[in-house]
Image (tube, chains in turn orange, green):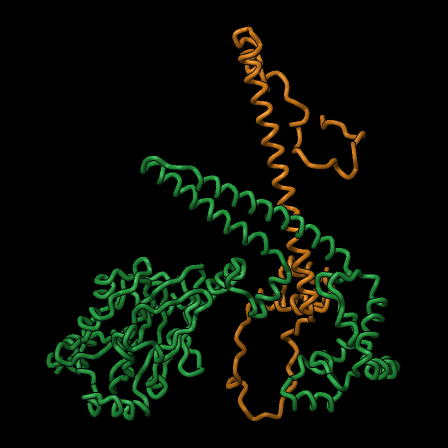
Length: 162
Length: 420
């Protein structure tokens, strides 16, 4: 059985010994059957993907499916529902907070436009986008924004490639 | 493993013999805390000590064959397996919602807080509905606006009622046990979802693939769950039913999911009656009944037991298929009467006397009916058909239909003249 490199690496990860391939050069042991070997049924070629799926699905290292008693399943379900509810509440809260911030910003702009008493001059000046991102680029946009800092922290030894 | 069993055997024996203790655990007060189990047990033991267990064995707890027999003689079957009952004797028997698992209890707290919130919301929506209703309207436009607003609020209220209970594990358990109370919105919602997930799909597939839908009626979107029984046997949509079994009228179980009372018309139509003269197929109405009341709790309809004066227009005619004819599709339709108003039975009886060549489409248009449910079974020639034909006095009982031989076209003939 020749495996593709991906499957071979997978097999090595799961510590599956690859079967030694039978070399065609060696003669097969002769059987006592008088049936001509041509009449033997040829095994249909099996799909390698299916074989591998089955292999990994039923491998002892594959974790077993969750099988619970009824009460335990119901407890599991309850906890799952509560977690779903909790996350949805968190999401809703975040959305509302964003909405509140956006509205506060737009209200402040409106106040600047109408309440500053300069005919909206300050507002117009602040909304002016001329020269933005032309001369310099904000350093935060230099890399992809992430939620948390990297695991290694700041790499002080880094130098720009000349 | 064996050692372990051997070691625990005396222990088990001890538990088994002293199940008065376990019995006490069953009769807990509802508001018991987790730690007070020993106290509660002692109290209960004092109460039950007056009557020994063997006098009045509990069907949920008996495990000795002698007591089980005693109970069976009284006509009470023990509950669950003996293994389960033995396990229950030794258990603390804490109610499910009080099980002392930390994560589970935390989860329940979150769910209960959400439920409280939903209940408050329901209360506020109710108040709002009352406020909107109290506002007087002057013209048609305001009336319409009020109506649509009330409709939207009502829908929102129903949705909230479902959301308040949908996360309750006890509701889920009750529904799975089939003990759900269909008057409550959450059980109706669960039942409808379950029906739509599988059984409705099967039904719609059968009635469309077997072409009942364009043949008998133009459209049908089933909204009620319909089950069909001959005797006690459930018939799946599209099953073949032997003529002997279908000689008696079936029973229907019509489960609605909306909380309202409805008057429906039930019609059983066969669109496959062979007509030799015209070389095609005719319709025959096998059953027609009107003004059948159904509701969420009143679901059973026995077609044989409907009142012959006030409801049945055409009584049950046993479906038979002549020998050699293709199978007959017997389609059952539940049609909603307009505004749930009763139809005039005397008029219908005078008009609808002819079973043959009455199309359901005509009836639908004439009486403003709307199909809300459907079912289907099939019948074909079998060994019991001849007897049933004799019983109902079928005229062409001894006729066997044969397919007409179609002469192949000249270029499709095996050996045409031009080849010789």
